[in-house]
Image (cartoon, rainbow over all chains, first blue to last red):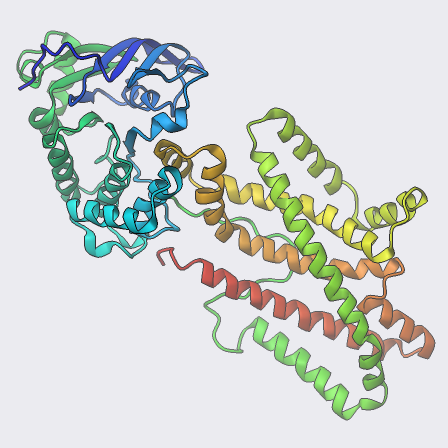
Length: 250
Length: 260
């Protein structure tokens, strides 16, 4: 499935990153890279540091040491305009975080209009197309509170896509959803993956990891224990810790 | 979804609930009673009451002026103080916090005396100006706390979502946080407005001819204490009740995007 021969420079390059929350070591000397178009699924028990790692890619968490290069820019360098760089990094949260005071369409158009100087007409046009893509065009003019969790998360994905990011980061996008709504969100993510989007996904959905991932990364206690293709990962895991984890969740 | 936390409602008249029906609630009974008594006294016991009403009329205007100008200034100060209190910049935060501590620690009446008499030695402040400054400075501190509470009540995820799209701190505050905070802030801010209106009666101590002072002047000339203060109290009550209704209507308008 994956073409691991690409000599292209990585679009995300995380080198020796550490981060502590008080006494808790959330990330312990973690290195990982992603190339353009690659889909990386990060799994692991809660508290393993997977969300922290993902959130450090767009600097929602600032790391204590190590470097993170995104699209050629060191995100912690004082010369890097993090706000500009974040426009290239779409993020989807566990709790959706739609703007409740804006309609669905306004949620999508706010950033393109304010940050890219797009005209309202153009932003609306793109917004409607994206809503079409995630299958809730008819909800364009309602407020997010009127939507189900699955619908809200699809809007959140569309909102991130409205900035035409190079990379999409998903932080447990289905964990807050009722079971019957997980499928509709995963479908959107699978479509996105097939279109070639570069994606980093923290999730507990092993089916999704199997189907979509080029590479699965298993984390525990703030470190990467093992990584590899889904075939390797689910059929021949090397580490005891990985085997234990898989036996618990599969 | 970001939940809405309820801000504790402090002093001030109770804001009528949307669930109350018709005039058969505390607000309805109060307003009907107050207006009814005023009309009755004015029309049927008109000998002293008509004179009182005419005498204090320009005092009502002054009370409104002081209230209106103080509300505007106090909101501006409150917004700045509130933003200062949530600022990550330690110096700004400290200045804002100190301001709140100091001002809230001094009674409003003392602040009024201080600005009018004590500072009056160095500055020549007009009495009305002194009143507005004192009210604004004092209520600005209280309002600042309300703004701070409203801003911090907004879910952290909202800030993260905005920042992850590429908005800077300022854009996040003004495009995402404050528009939402308004709704949580409005009931307590409305209560501050009402409390402020009532506290403007303190400025009658200075040479400001507000509603209460006009009443005092009239009663000390005519010795009609009962009649005068009955009228003054009823007028304050009607104004306060109308203001509280206005606030609750605004609140209902602003909550249109919340699921009920």
